[in-house]
Image (cartoon, rainbow, N blue to C red; front, side, top):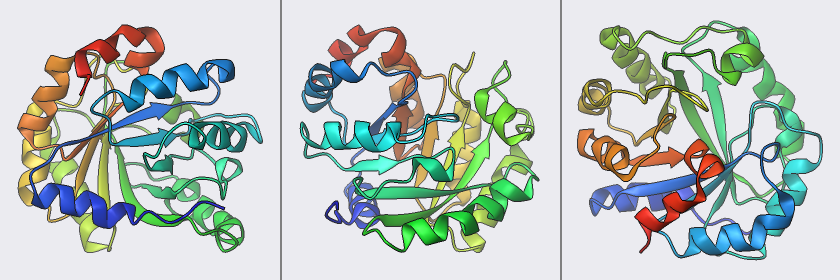
Length: 244
């Protein structure tokens, strides 16, 4: 069973010190298990501060096997980013307890969460309530297909901001603005700035970020933690841009 690393307090402490955080998202269904050691070595040599593991559709037991393997090669916090209850494993350090507040499918607002409780009670995972907001990105994403929900338009900044603030009022500890895996374009600077301006909790931004310039742009706009996944799935050379 994983040891609790006080993930949320660490994120808040980094924000207080004005440090920017980077999570590498590994999708078990898209990852070559045999490459784990070499891939994690590249993460360890980069500016990455966290590792997220999860995907919209993942084979049963694949997440646990991968998390165990990752933990053998890094001291970074390994956090579950689950698309389903089947992706919960006690081997990780924490879990983003995602509520898809941009959608109106009750299964992903509360249904799956109730289903997860029996599993979570038997772990030492740090469970972090997270408001998950899907932003339109130019293509249909796996999240849309699996959850049967629609993203919020990038032009509807007031709705995005109000949704994020509602998450804070509900007691969620993080807000995650997500353009989705393989997004044609990332969450805009305008959206990030607007949301950051009204939040008093940490802001995570992910999806569609494929270059160091885009990464820096998200930080400049106010993202506290940026998540990158597809960029590394398509081009591991990106690691050379973000070495320590």
